[in-house]
Length: 124
Image 1 (cartoon, rainbow, N blue to C red):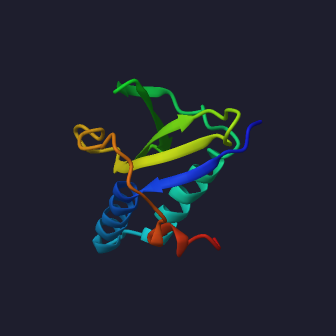
Image 2: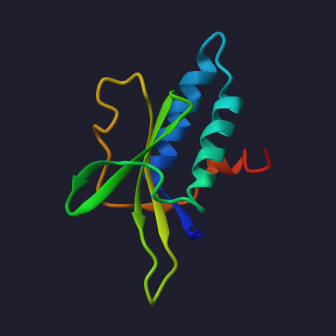
C-alpha cells in the first residue's frame, strides 16, 4: 500500500464547484451528500492510486478514471514515487457520468490549487 499526495488542479476545483452548484439547484439535489461521496472516493486514492483504469493517454500521460457511485467520473494522473518525491495523484476534473463525453475539456497542463469546495467538507 503506497500513500501518495493528492493535488487538485484549478480545473478540478472549478468542475467540482460547478457540479455541486448544479446539484444543489435541483429540487431533490443533495450537494452535501454528493460532495461527501466525491471527497471520500478521492481520499481512497491515497492508499490505492492505481485503482482507476486508464481512460485516455495524452502527451504520454495516463489519465485514469475513478467512478464514484456510478454518478461521477474523477479524472486523475498518478505519478509514482521516485528517489526525489512521494507519489502524487493529480486530480484533473470531476464530471457527471451522464455527460455524453465526460473527458472533453480535461486539460493536460495542471494549475495546482487547493479545493475551497472540498475543503469545506473535509470534516465529514
